[in-house]
Image (cartoon, rainbow, N blue to C red; front, side):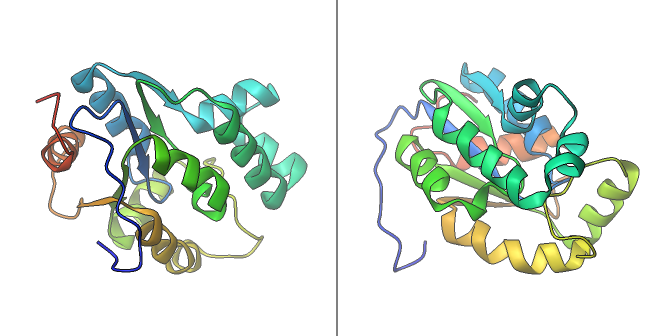
Length: 183
């Protein structure tokens, strides 16, 4: 825990959990598993953006640019219901202090920390994945820029490097949650 970060107590029965992390870290996959195991509704911010914009995330990114996409992501997070929900954010949600503060007030923000090498492999498997960053910025540049932000906002960090599957990551998150409801 960061000594400069305020300590928030959500109570023993956490009703909202948010997963944050880089594109390709498994937020959506792990989020679905966690939602099932915790008995929460699941909200994927990327899917909410697609529904709002009426197109795939990559198409929105190409149409409006990365800064406008980040603003859309912020608006979606600020407007969405949070109670009794597992939220999987987009990778760039950490650029919005307002969004991250709202999520943090609702419950723990869990950073799925994944090594760059693993992310590189996963992102390469899905080249159409939209990453909201300036043109020409490499995955390595995005990683170096965002990891300090994820750490800043994380209430819980789960090191995914040695975890073999999404189920293993979900179990590690459950073990780390206060008042663990869903094992």
